[in-house]
Amino acid sequence: MNRLIIFVVFFIFSAAAAADCNVKNHEKFDGFFSKWSKNKKFSLTRTLFPIKSIEYSNNGTEAESVPVYGQISKAEVESNPSLSEYILKQSLAYDISSVSSESATVKVFKADTDWLYEYHFKKLQGCWYLHEVEDLSTFD
Image (cartoon, rainbow, N blue to C red; front, top):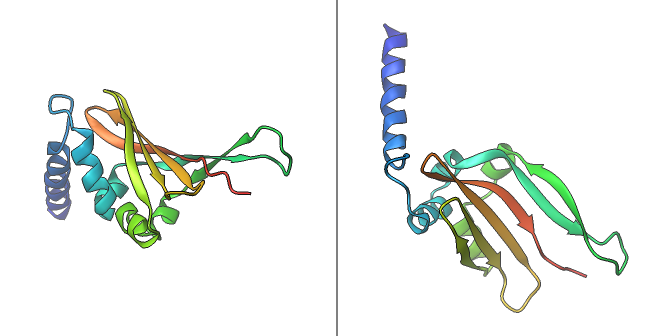
């Protein structure tokens, strides 16, 4: 009996989450990003872990930067504030720089500095998910 109750509760919550978006009811990126950036619980459900990360290193030379690939774990994300809180605390800004039917990019930056991150999202079965973070900052 307990297993049945757990299954029913799980099914109800899964159905409620799926009602937000699906193949027939495509989610608009602006509304998704507003909720994703402010609501930590929601953002954790709409992030593909581990997140691919890319930063660039010039290996101490003036030569062209080379990409360094890594991953960001769910535990790392859980221990940080929501993106909106981080932007506010660090005096950052953001710009939804591109949106297509399959992907979107949000630039998070600090005005008048070389501080720049790009958050890359993709749409899967009508729902948006964060899948990659790229550090394009050019600190000396």
